[in-house]
View 1 (cartoon, one colour):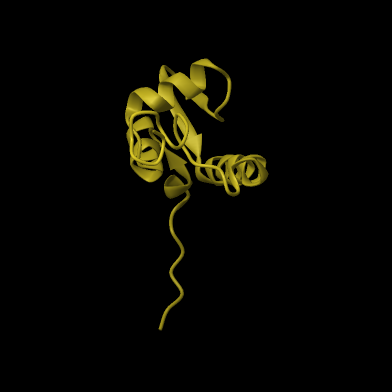
View 2: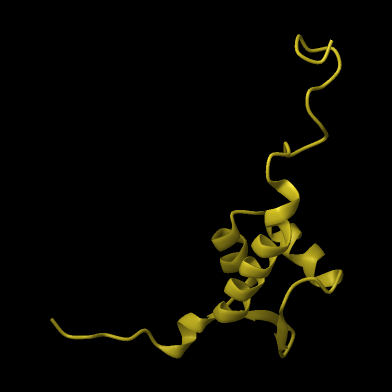
Length: 87
């Protein structure tokens, strides 16, 4: 079987592609960029992303949150008042 490599264009992603890759809305990507929390660059007037930078950002997010969320619920708190377990 022939070893086929992807063209370099697959290493550069659009806002839509990044949102799909992360499973979020495009507005979330724009908000992260606006807060300088996300790696992006401009190509003329268009925002673009290097896949390696996105993967590095994901790893950093995972590493920074790993110790914070172990054994803790995600969201506004648990249990909520008014539920059987929160009384």
